[in-house]
Length: 216
Image 1 (cartoon, helix red, strand yellow):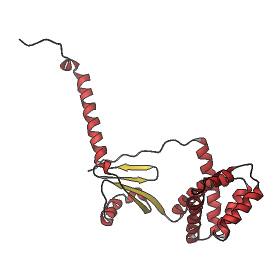
Image 2: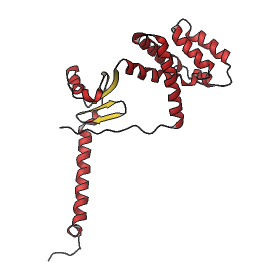
Image 3: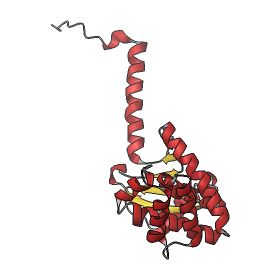
Image 4: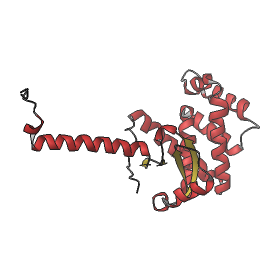
């Protein structure tokens, strides 16, 4: 039976935590105003489109939105020109509220927080399944079924093939990582042999000392 280990992500910086906290605040207010779960999902997708289709394609906009040298009126005008007719009224209103409070720099954090919040409300959870070789849907479902107790919600699965695993699989659920790969088991075996050798030397060091005497 495969062994599994759980690891946590590195500690976040104060700036990261502050931006994420703001992102959650704006995301919660935006989704509450959007309507039902389907309308909330549409808003999440719009926010993600703002990031991927606009901000990522023109890095200058990030600097403009974050700049204190650009007035609120100028930023509001830019929002109307860029998103007017493309984004829903609810999404555009959110961006304008953020501009009014000089928070457009955290749009990415709002989009991430909105996705996580919607998944929680819809009882969905993102899961990354990493395998050494491609697996079919039937095997994927068998693996996920074995982790029903850990998931606790309907999974949104992302597949990834990583030949370095050699065999087995790795499942990532939020901050938790369940590692059942052959690579990890081999590393555990290697570390176990080293530990046993060290313990043997500590129990009887004289047996491992070469006194340099030649046999006649």
